[in-house]
Every structure is written in structure tokens, then in C-alpha cells.
Length: 111
Length: 118
Image 1 (cartoon, each protein chain N blue to C red):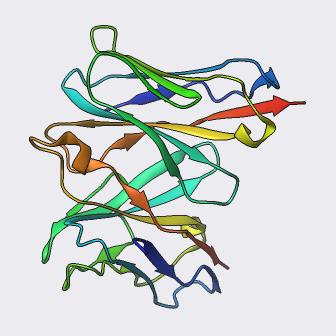
Image 2 (image 1 turned 90 degrees about the vertical axis):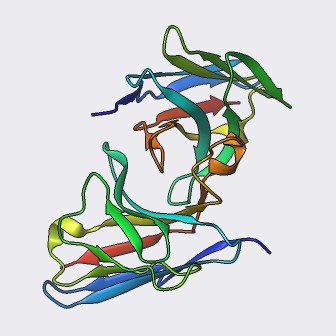
């Protein structure tokens, strides 16, 4: 059973701070890693995808992947109240057709 | 506009009354899938399809059926709904499984269908 683990939170950070979200996974042959943002009652929206070890930056978001340690993280710099949402980590191995999702981490950015 | 659509968006029904939730994508994606989302349990795979007439079970397929007769459509069928199928359902599609171009395995989600079975 492939597992993707996330701390459910809530993670509360002040506006302007860096929010750090973490995800660990069990399948060592995982190849594709995704971070989705989901507002309450809405559909998941892709923020970042990462496929190689290291960092990938896109605006205020940075995804970090460490395959040896089997974790992937998402950093949100200069957090805004509009970043308040649930963040879903998804992992897909080369032998799978669709990814497995973690249960998500709730982020609250307070003014 | 590239999108995944679902209908209906909201549905209240009674136990045992057959229903179908439609899903359609206009991106010529090969892979389509259905998830349900419940509080504290996250997104769980119900069924997925790799191409026309090719489907497979996900993690929670009991009580559901699917069909893929056309590439763009992937309806979810509940033959005899029960209250434990009350949930938020999402359809998703991706171009492919990745292969040599891993970026093609990004999933795009529909807006969701909130189903209540009384």
C-alpha cells in the first residue's frame, strides 16, 4: 500500500512569514511529486510539480525534493491571508497511472 | 478553454435510486479518474481509465461503476446509492502517465459534485 503522509495541521503563520509544509512517502520508486492547493469546497489546483532532487522555485513557492529521505516539502514565502487553504501532496510512481494523495495540511495565514 | 466539467454539481437523492455523474474533458487527455473526498480521509481513488474501454479499480471501488466509451467522457455510476456514499466527488484527467516526459502526468480536476444520499 503506497502511503503519503502529511501533518493535518492546522499550521498557523503570520502574514509575511515563511510557511513550510512537509510530506513523506513510502514508495521508493516514486517519480512524480505534486503540490495542490484546495480551498474549502473547491477542487484541487496544481501549484507545483517536481521530478528531480533539489529545489524548484516558482514565484513565492519553492518545492524541495529529497528522494533518498523520501520527503517533499513546499515553502511559501511572504505568506498572505489568501494562501489560507489545505495543501495536498500527491506522489506517483512510474508504475502507476494516477497519483496517491496525502490527507492534506491546513494552512492559516493570519494578518 | 481547457477544462474538466462535471454534472451535476450538487445532488440530493435517496437510497437505492440509480444515478450517474458525468465527467467530460476537452484536452484530449488519455487518463481520467474519479476520486471521493471525505473529511479526515483526503482524496481516495475510486476508478481510473487509461484509454477508451480500458478502466481499472482504485482504492475504494465498491458500489461504483464507470465506463469509457469515448475519450472525452468518463461517467461515474452509482447503481444503488447508500448513505455511506455521501461525499464530494472529483473527476480528473491527465495527458498521459508520464513516461519519458514526466510533466504530462499532471492531473487537472473538475469542479466537484457534492452528493448527499438520504
